[in-house]
Length: 146
Image (cartoon, rainbow, N blue to C red; front, side, top):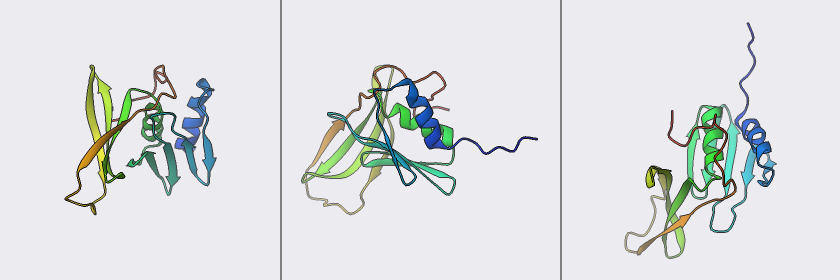
């Protein structure tokens, strides 16, 4: 029986990005990152102890499945996902990930800072990447898709 280890999420991302030579990423100490373009957000994937953490600006999520983590990373490079940051006094205090589905933005998850001023006025700032303008490869699932 073949007991090979499953491919690491970072290797899956780098392999998929070979189809998109215009997308430049950098790997440093177990983290692979793509820097934000105009109006976008940084995207990174980190692996540690069998867990992957995908970050999109202030938003992040934890994965125990390398394929799901790499799929999420790739979708974050497209205009089919966006991050809506909640800012108070110019400081990001939360973020919501959204996915375009049937011409509507559907919330996928959020991250927030528990220690924020309850009195400061909040403003939403929409950030969207356009590193990959065409759909990711067919085998790639969108965030929140089985």
